[in-house]
Image (cartoon, rainbow, N blue to C red; front, top):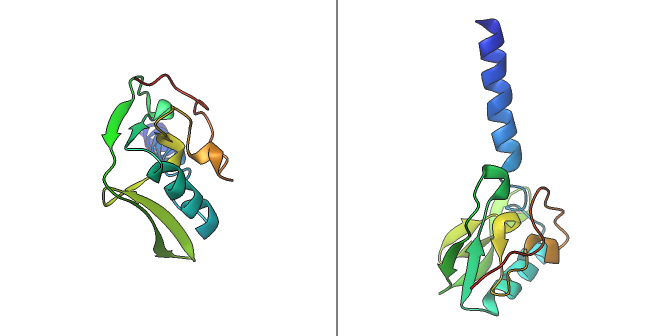
Length: 114
């Protein structure tokens, strides 16, 4: 029973380690990410560490960098929802986080987009 509990805790921690790699950023990186995304009308979401294999197309209507109200950090909102830049690709299929100073791990630098 104790082994199952420890395994469950470690599994939860590994999932949380994959998420939120580049959601909370310093102001400059958040503004750079928002600027990159605002240059196009579409973006793509793909969380490779989560097991996703097909990018989800996002039609962009609004992009903004906003104060996350947490330790002076900022986040990027696309269409009013926060995004983790580690799993967001611009219209050309380039990873947005890797175009900032955020060192996203286990993500492709580029993906094929249509």
